[in-house]
Structure formats: C-alpha cells, structure tokens
Image 1 (cartoon, rainbow over the protein chains, first blue to last red):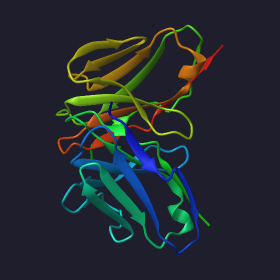
Image 2 (image 1 turned 90 degrees about the horizontal axis):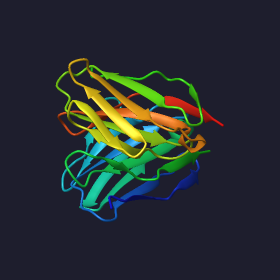
Image 3 (image 1 turned 45 degrees about the horizontal axis):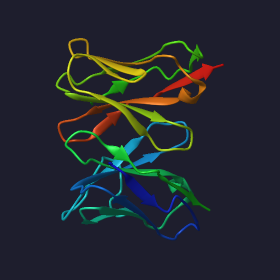
Image 4 (image 1 turned 90 degrees about the vertical axis):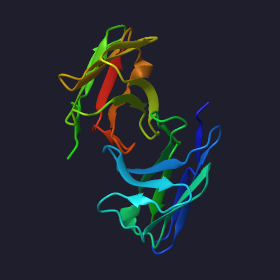
Length: 114
Length: 110
C-alpha cells in the first residue's frame, strides 16, 4: 500500500513554455500532498503544501504564480511550471500521507529546460 | 528556524559491518522522526519511522531516538553493497511538513 505515482518521469521543454506534472495517490486518499524540488547533490526543499479543495500553501521564496498547484481531488495534485527557464531544471518530487505521520514519495519528475 | 543536521559523509563501511548514521534536530517539541533512503537519481524511500524514545527494529535496521538529547540514529546491520545510498533524516513539524537533513552518503564496499 501507500503508492504514489508521478507523470511524466522525464520532460524536456523549451524556455518559455509551461509544463504540468501530475501526482497521484494510487491506493489511498490524500487531503494534503507536498511538492519538493531537489537540485543535484542537494537535499529536498519543500516548495508547497497542496490542499484538496483550497489554495496551496507556498514556502518562503517560492513564486506561486510561477509554480501553479491544483489539488483537484483526493487522489490528484498537479504542479505546473509556467514560463519555464533553464534555472527551473530540477528533480520535482511529490509526497502524500495515507495516515497522519508517514509521507510516501512519488518517483519524481526530472525537468530539463533548454 | 527549525533544523535537522547530518554528517554528509561519505561513511564507508565494509560489507557485513554495522553502519551507524546520526542526526540531530533543533526543535525540542518534535514528535515524529523518519529515515529515508535515496539512491542516486531516484526519489526517497521510507525505511523507518520512530515516535518514542528508545529503539525500534525492523529487519536489519534499527532506529534509535533520544528526545532529551534531540538525537536520532539509524543502525544498519550486516551492511550490503546494495545499502549504498544517501540516507535522509526527516523530522515532522506541527504543520505536518517534513524538515530534511542534507543526508549522509553511505558506501558499503565488498
């Protein structure tokens, strides 16, 4: 149990375009999901908390207009990177929790902006 | 600023030895602690969670928690080359967020 999927696993896009990443909890419902970004050889950095039915909560320094989050249902959250630039190239990972405490991560999406 | 600290390593141990990974945290009110394993290029995988002082064992893994010292550790017995990865310590905040350490890279050599 506690499986989280992400799609796509890899995406290459041109500078200025937008990219949507989906995160799904496959065997449980999640009112809250989390989006992280990880640069090479660095730790995970929380970007935002995605709340089903309400606005996401963004961490300090994360532009909410650039990283659009929509938690459309109890099993799906999407992250859209708008007007992507090469510095947005990173490993984006979502997580969700079937209980109160343990978070399970999706396999991640590697974004490359050319 | 709530912090979680880990030695970045690498920690090198021979196959079959015990690997000991350590983590300290700053928020004395923290109640939930987690160890994740992350292979290069992959996302983190939950290995252990611990909520009470003392030891918690699961197979070759033992998590140890000392809230008075604000210290969490992970012991890996009979280390295998497949255990070579980065181990992330995480502490849950009162808003359900996880604060991660920078991770300790473990290398198990044959």
